[in-house]
Amino acid sequence: MTPKVVVPETKLTFQSASVLFDKNVIRRVYERRVRLALGQPPTLLQTEAANAYTRLCTLGNRLYITEQTANILQRRPSVFADEFLADTQTLKKGRYLRRWARRLRELSFSPEDAIVVAYGSFGIDLTRQAVGVEAIVTGDLKLVAHFNARQEEIRERFEGMISSLSTPYQTLALPSIMIPTDILTL
Image 1: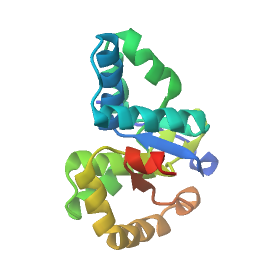
Image 2 (image 1 turned 90 degrees about the vertical axis):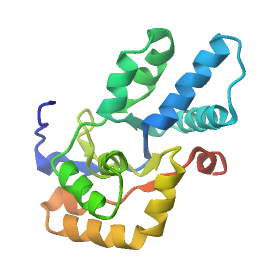
Image 3 (image 1 turned 60 degrees about the horizontal axis):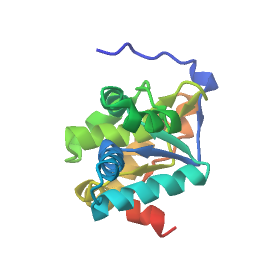
Image 4 (image 1 turned 90 degrees about the horizontal axis):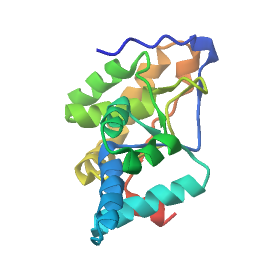
């Protein structure tokens, strides 16, 4: 069990131009690197994920992964994983992350999808004293479809929740959820 992160709430700010990659996008980029090293052609999904990742890196966005993804990468061969760990920061579980994940599960999100969206809403970057991200990039089409279909209900619940929280959290915005091809068509 990871220790609870305590950050002085008055110092937190919402950050724009920030992106959280879920683990399936990072996995596809990682797999592409491995396939290329082995002399094998990457799949279309791996290429799209890698191109979206590269584009966001070059645009100067702050790039994030979850603690779970960072743990997975740390166990992989460093020749393929170190670049991810250098390009990204790891979001820590913020104060209201679990509560928001629970509310998302009530809206029929899977536990894993709820955690990803909750990290995008309440994940904390300890180095910047910032909370939340502007966008989540995922390869999970089911998550994107479910989020878009229930977006109004999600937004109402999110706004209802943050309105009762302390001042720094009242300024948060619900992140958008995108797939790699959305990044490539920007």
